[in-house]
Image (cartoon, rainbow, N blue to C red):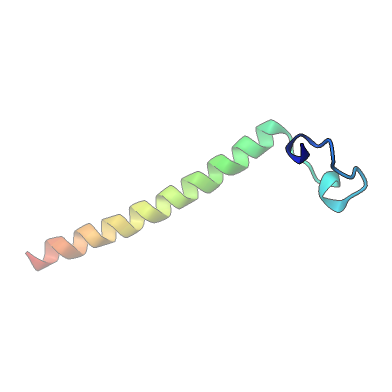
Length: 54
């Protein structure tokens, strides 16, 4: 029930700072892109180091 806001206090601090669905998707997309870039960079470093050993 709380997921749909039925039990949410409208005067709470968290309820005052709600994002639209478009903004939430944008923020999550940026976060996902940043995490993907970090994982890709670490993977590239590991591949490059392993190729030097051969």
